[in-house]
Figure 1 (spheres, rainbow, N blue to C red):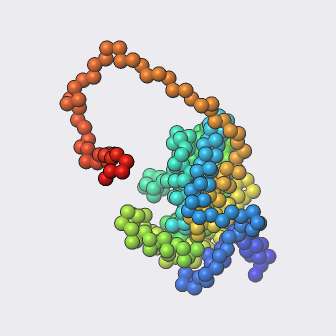
Figure 2: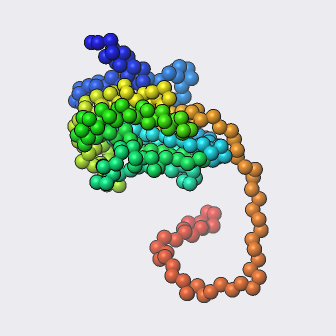
Length: 312
């Protein structure tokens, strides 16, 4: 092994890559690797109840961060990458569900059109970058070229090599322009991914999440691992490093990701003072039109009648 290979191997380990990422799908050992720099005495075990309580607390902090971003006209881009069923979408949903969609928006681009395929590779992503006072969450990003396009053969070797050369400079340019760029890789084990795939297969309401591409990615587990390692070796730069989220437990992954995101942007509490509701305007002779002139949605569901205490 060359000195460069040894150095790359050491770097991958430091960035939280899992050992089983490089092992064949059918021979993954049942091990737990957190890669966490937090001492055990400072870790906080959670269950469903404590998860919901802590999530509510962190979501309140996200609202404070949102107001700070808007007040300071910050430009924030957060990239979510990882294997299929790693939990990216669930984390994004918990981040955004309490935020203003005019400030924090999600971008999840479909496959490029024939016209977009002829453009500069980064061109279709640039249109979605934030203006001042906005935060954009990229549910997959330009790193498609380093992962799915590379593994599935959707790009040439020359296009792939050019991407690895270009993306560090492209991201440095974004940072120099004032964009806060944060990149997360959700790392999931083979065993947990299979469990989540099976859950989707068995649940008709979630089966749409499984595409032929997802199944192909499962069959090419090792190729994806190699592509991820190569991507980290070229794009884990000082100005925009990768942060690996251990995603085998969805609740822990969501909380850890949100907590880390909050720590990446210093913010102040701009919560406004309590609002006093003004009195309702008097009708002053206003007469409503007949209710029969309006078309209502059929009331199939109606509120349950309340009964007196002690009576059924």
